[in-house]
Image: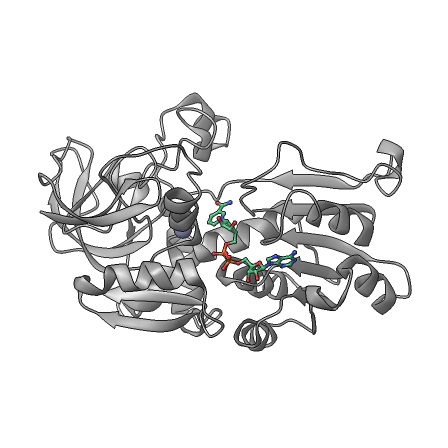
Length: 352
Ligand code: NAD
Ligand code: ZN
């Protein structure tokens, strides 16, 4: 079979591989629609997970089941499925403790295009199909549903980590596709003031459509000061970090946060050895300003709950998809868009 792969750090291309083998609990899936991710860019061009050779990329897909193992109960050949980016081992102790994304070691619930071949292939393997695949409901567009693999669950997880409550004032830092889904989730959770920090018009327009009450541009000066100015010096109850960096962004988040507030970080911190937390603004260690950071939860139950939001008209992911390609041969073009981030891009999808 053909796959679009990381050949080594900084190099990608088409390769031929054997079709993956299906274990008794597993499924083999043929993609219907896939999307490249900022994480694929970190993996290839920033060496984020170390060197990989001839590893097929991609972890965001909707597909059709072409084979199931003998012990799979709830999925059959021909079923249309949503594939979560994170596919844990559900029997692991970490999963029993409530942290399935860390089953097999910290962050090891992330398997596709990390330590096994990803979804940019004619066929890919899904472990524990009954627990990790989700049925695509009739009436949900498979292209819109690709955003459920990673963008929706990650953005929503930022809001869960920050524990947004009715009437909270919230700031989302970074409004790429993940941050935009944090904006949508914070609005669903009942945020009052909802600041979205971004610089591109396409993202700002989408953020307003998803429920942001005000856009702040980080190119117009310190965003913590901007938030303080707009809240009479009080700051916000919750901050979700979905963009920025380890050196500057956490300091801004701490400074704009009220005592007792929470920060939910889903941003990947790709450089520097330390995350900088400003001592005095963190209440000299006593400010009750909590920082939580997490990898998105995967698994079927969460996927099926999130797709119910699309099915019932509570969430429209189509707005995230700014570029559509028909044909697997456009995979490289789509990935390069993600790498170069032209000003009109939120997410590309390749339809096979
Ligand atoms: P993205 O690059 O499209 O979005 C990040 C946004 O942050 C960009 O629009 C950028 O302009 C903005 N930004 C950059 N510097 C900023 C600053 N100083 N202040 C405010 N905004 C700034 O990426 P994305 O696809 O939306 O993903 C966001 C992050 O989430 C990435 O780091 C990605 O690797 C990570 N991620 C995490 C998980 C997880 O499970 N935790 C899953 C998927 C992606
Ligand atoms: Zn992704």
